[in-house]
Image (cartoon, rainbow, N blue to C red; front, top):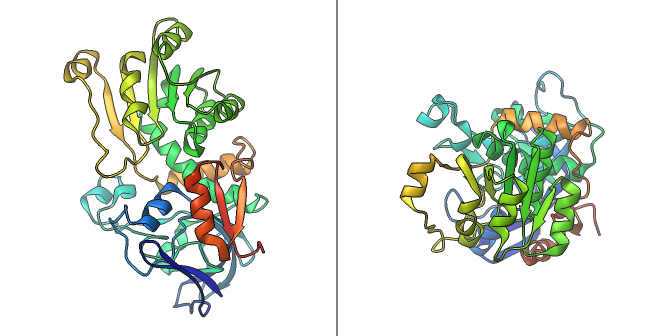
Length: 346
């Protein structure tokens, strides 16, 4: 089978390797769709180092068909099922796991970092990760692969109590920003504002559920305050790793607002400036979010499966596994919403 193996930063080869042998309890997936995430780009370029080991097969957003099992599958799963794969395998014993934060387990291993991910024709699912398989029969493979990043967005929205927010601001309308907008609409947020320099992406944001779309610049904060009846937004998602997607919009926050720094920031450019007194006197909450919980993944999978969340338009280009580097470069260029890699594309 083919695999895209990264042996060091910027050193990727497409190689033929044996289909993985299964140990007791394991199963085998034929990869149907694997998507390129910003994290994959950072791993490829070497700017993300934590938890990355070489050689590695990237691709933590993927779906596949169960083709073989060395033992019984969990109840509800069978050979031939299409599944979305929750990418984290937590230890279950560290302080994060015992406090209900398995998504930030200190000892977790992940597909696409330590375990071979979806940039190959097949993936072995260890017995310890069988619970990570979520059946999504009837869903398009690309849509099934989108469940992972969408679940990360859902985790971020939970952390800022978006279910109870009247107004939400999303800065950055790349794929994850759009996912936040669609989820916010699905969970009933009344007023959704989107800010992005791209008019094209703002059109998609509007179609995704944003009632007010704005390009950055003078007057944006006043426009947001006018839209919300001078109340401001109760919740804000920073969906791009840039200080200027956060700092200019503090004046748009309502008292008690919650802000999620969702995007990862480039190392060396990850310093933000905020007035301590502004946070203190307005009781602002500033949180980060990392990945998602298995329960988030299962919930979002149900929304995708029943059509509540429309995601089939988010994957706009799919390239052959032979051109995985090209897929990474296309994703970095930012012209596509999501770029896929598939061994089934010539």
